[in-house]
Length: 382
Image 1 (cartoon, helix red, strand yellow):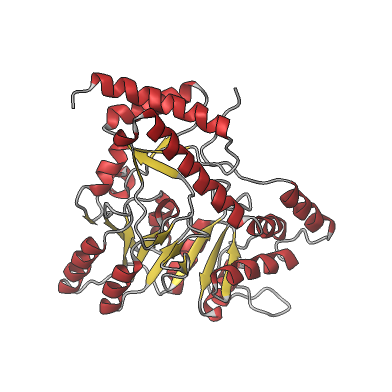
Image 2 (cartoon, rainbow, N blue to C red; image 1 turned 120 degrees about the horizontal axis):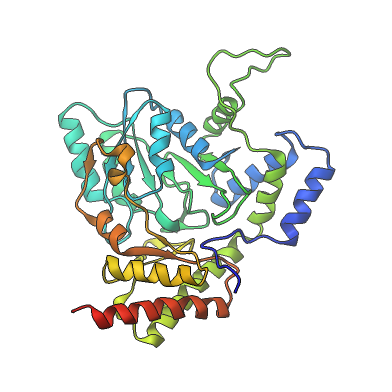
């Protein structure tokens, strides 16, 4: 049987031809017309004019933090329930991540805990230089509540929308919900350039500044002149061509991924295990993009039994993010927690969510999930 991956790229003839056309155009160097066109395509989609395509989402996070004024010695409040790139980018600036737990109804940063954390920081005269909010698994956080408290303390928001292209909060596109936004185009994301990211901003000057820093902060003169430290963060013209082609398919990819999520729900309901499986909740304000179908089950033993059953048939699945405050590298960092993300990590997993999954694939996956859960529930006291 063919291996089923968690979230493989959904590419085909359109992307292949776009790459070949870019190659044949002679624009092999990092800059070129496809790069500018890709930035325009993303900017047009989200309604913000500033866009700078970069080599990775991590590079975009780094420059976004610099854009809002994060400096060495600062604190930055970060969602704990996320991938390490979010917190790592804070350290690139010489700043310190302080972790905020999730809320149960969206799995994203808890506005209530953020209120407490900012009040405590203000009392001690150490407000963070920024709050980095992660739109987890393609779902925006509760930005009305988060924006209200951040505005009250004058703290800017960096929106880590790495997984959330095509999603929206109350009709406002993900990526435009903070002061600066970031997308990722890694191979497993909603669209891919094989690897890459983008910084987006309402102010074109912010994107232009990021572009300058991303090209080694080189001055516009004939010789090489630099008056500050820059980075080699620019996306190449060739991979931008792939991203531009992928943008034309974003709505179709989103629809396919949401159909995958619906397919899981139908199969679990038909089998009778739907009462023992909980999907990531989608609040009324969230227009989720379906990036990954994520569930929680009864306990850690049940979760591990499902993962093992899938792996035995060469099907990839993965536990939900291990929270940053539990990671050895950040074990001594401050954190405002209530146990939500720890419970999610213990009982949750991500199921295969590729846009190319067939009904037969879903039947194969669900057969193992249902079988593992049925065996677990039959041997576990209620």
